[in-house]
Amino acid sequence: MDALFFWLLFVTMRTVQLRDESNPPFLRDADLKIVDEFRLLLDESTNMTAPQIRIKVEGWIANQSSQIQIAFSKFEEEVEKVRKDAMMAHDVRVAELSSDVQKADLQMMAIASDENLTEKEKETQIVTIMNGLDPSKRSELIRSITAEDISTS
Image (cartoon, rainbow, N blue to C red; front, side, top):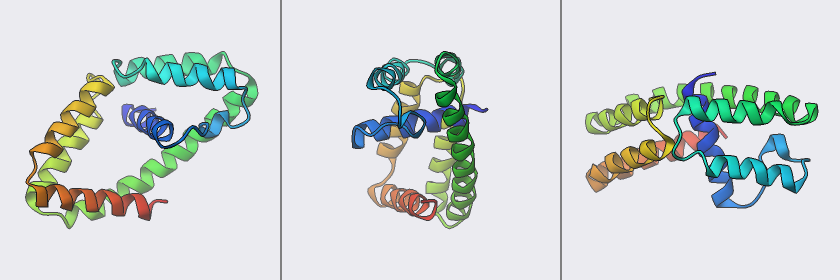
């Protein structure tokens, strides 16, 4: 599994936590104690790199029931499929963007896949790039991202 997978897992789980309190799919039937342990693990991961998070998540999963391990394995497969679909949609959309937005997108993708950066550093750098864009360029990028989210749902 690559760094982008774990970054996507991290972002997905943080988004789920911010949006509502629903459980991650692989913990849907787990006890609340187990779910809380996993959420704490993610909360403590913002200052870790993707490889550090990978080790932490894999170690935690290895200590769970076989039901959770199997569910997580299926979740990884689904995330990988969604990632591939999203990357294909992303490549198509990027080709339609202005050169300034393409450049910003390329910078953000490089940041997202940089295994030497912590999740907090990635977030900070990506927000800096977004905030540095002219408002019309930022809107162009956001529309593109929103269109990708809709097309891969």
